[in-house]
Length: 204
Image (cartoon, rainbow, N blue to C red; front, side, top):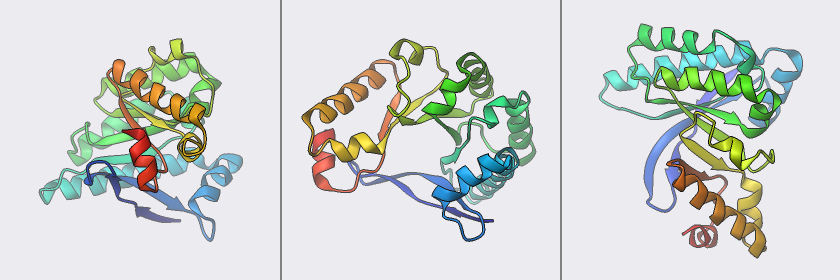
């Protein structure tokens, strides 16, 4: 298993904003590694290993005077772990890393599998100070009413909408409406997969 970091920048402000953690298993790409781990049941052990690695690395950077926001993806299987929040709190305390630096990115589809349990687990995670983002928002058709019950601080709009908004006025409207909705709920909103200046202009 190979682990690496990918820098995350704001295309609108040209400001460094954080580091998402990427993982590759053997010769599989990151896009192939996660489904493979979920199918084999290895995903929970992988998540624990990656979270510990991220927290140790974040603590090392903090000791060097660098406070870097860290993003780690988790899966639906991780939401089944009743001790998930307590385990993260223990790792943070052991390394002395401020809980506000790590961010857990949860796919919208994972939240929909067992929504009541997901809400409770995310409440516990937010309770220890760790931030939570909904990843690939818009891909799972979740209820807008349900959104206000989630203990999250950020929405990450699915890149399929960002790709389509250049050629579809309807998709552009959906993206802008989602941004306005997120901001009205006090959430940070991130557009995934922005690759050109036209997309930037449409998001403004």
